[in-house]
Length: 236
Image 1: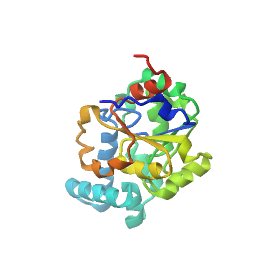
Image 2: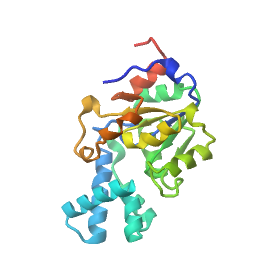
Image 3: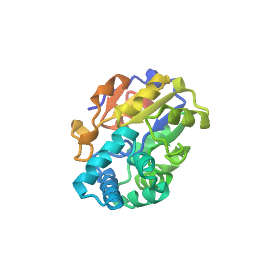
Image 4: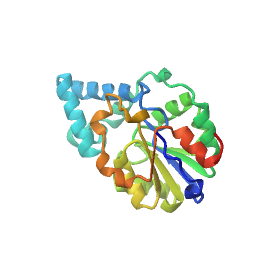
């Protein structure tokens, strides 16, 4: 489903901010699930835990610290570069070019950013595979965030200050409602990207967060169609 936006609602927007994983590509794409498996394997090897125990701990760290990486750094002082390199060593060929999304992003008036809890290399490889990398002005990754992930308020402040963005002039697209709480409070418009027909893949079931829906202005399961309604209203 897609809530059709009124173009006038976005007429003031000069900065378009997109999460990466499960936002710029569909939930059903076998990409983030690969990263998820790699993170479980990393925890298992690091702490010599059986896979199921490692996965349970991985999710606990995610919920407490915002990312598995942050939790492992706080509790076990791991090397962030080693973690990021290993969990992003995945097969990107599952991604297919998305010309419709690329044209819609290109047509948006103003600057466009990727704001991700992953690293820049992963974001670049993903966006390049989708055929949309050249449409973005910059990528703000977990390293630029000082390894402090969304939804920490200081991370959004750091992003906005770096690019001289005023919250009321921006919109953020995210697949996790909890990551839209701070943008909403900063005056940004917020759009939640959901799985097609609200059917989550196995790796997303554990991270559903309906309690934060008050931070969401719009919901869509088709980002390209949503954007195209804004840039080309009245057209099919």
